[in-house]
Image 1 (cartoon, helix red, strand yellow):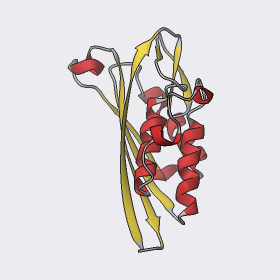
Image 2 (cartoon, helix red, strand yellow):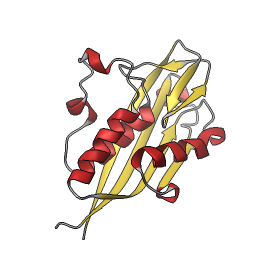
Image 3 (spheres, helix red, strand yellow):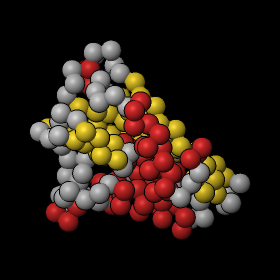
Image 4 (cartoon, one colour):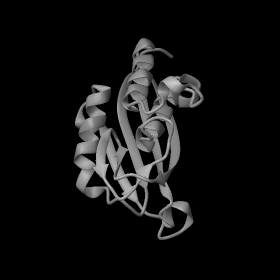
Length: 161
């Protein structure tokens, strides 16, 4: 049994809006997130982590931001694509862990819904998905409330060596 780990990281800045997407759910907020797709920074980081487990590049290689067909698209499509690539290599996702780094919005009220949505997209048990949040204590761009950063790590098992 081979065990592979992938790490993903993404950032998006705040922009005008009244809600934003995080982990595949819409969260009411005084601002949105700027991006080519729906700017779901969490699903982008998770997609990169999943692609990393099979050495399949990054989200930009599969869904270039210069391609207009991806404008405004639901980022769960990106994550499903990475999931399908893992399955084609007989991989099994055994754990996903995300850390959302922001001063706002507060993540705790949405954590359970976020975990459920990720588990649904990836067809994995809820206890395989962890979503955490932290602040940077007022430091850096997240501390200045200019945007959100997310770190993700995924573990995949494969029967192949």
